[in-house]
Amino acid sequence: MESATIIQVENLNKSFPNKGKPEPVLQHISFHIERGEIISILGQSGCGKTTLLNIIGGFEKPDQGRVLFDGKVVERPSRRCVMLFQHYGLLPWRSVLKNVELGLESLKLAPKERRDRAFDYLKLVGLHENADRFPNELSGGMQQRVAIARALALQPEVILMDEPFAALDTFNRYYLQDELLRLQAKEKTTIVLVTHDIDEAVYLSDRVFMMSANPGQIHRELKIQNSRPRDRGHSDFQYYRKIILEEFHFHHPTSPIDYHI
Image 1 (cartoon, one colour):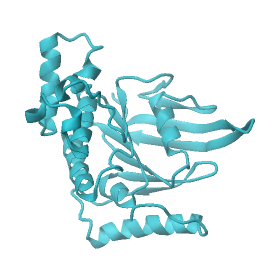
Image 2 (cartoon, rainbow, N blue to C red):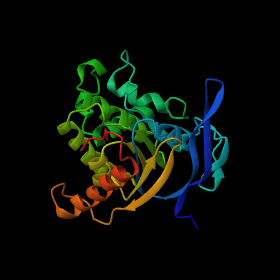
Image 3 (cartoon, helix red, strand yellow):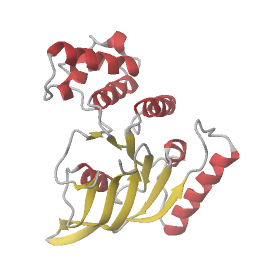
Image 4 (cartoon, rainbow, N blue to C red):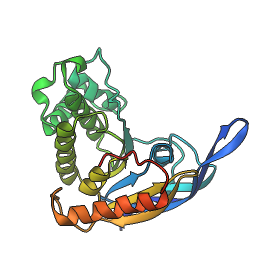
């Protein structure tokens, strides 16, 4: 029987050299993620969120500890777990459709099958009518939807997202958050999202892992009990928001908080 846990992070430690000495970036990080969950990793800039995401994805190796994906140790990147970056990574000389096809080119698919699958995922994100356009002809929000379509076209079990909406204005960010929830409900993909936007974490997540810095540690896990869709103006939403704000003020009493509030 398939295990409910898809990712298991066990006692991760990671350092990077700084002036000839190892500087701890992550320390004693342990948690699990269940299939179909949306998890947010929330913390200030420099607390090691992106490094943690890179280790989960197999792009970085931990100094100690390990990550298990579906019970097997992660040693390298895999198509079952794909990364979606803040900077969309679209190739400017390729059309929207050809950008979505890019990830499929290493698969053993006939050209028509590859094109059809890419087109289907463009349709899923509402951009099929822009299939022949080029990235510079699209808005930032549309480019991010192309990047999401490209990730989904690989039909991964997990998508890792590194502040994917941070560069967008509020309206585009809200729109894409709703799009992400719609797509995730349809595809049943597990999502791990790095963010420093408290509202985004509360709006999207089943659980929020709050990280402190120097070295990066998870000092609290918060389960968001509200069903979706969530109302940003509702008292329940404000209740979770307040818990998170108090948590960070408490842990960083002298630091300016640079979160989107």
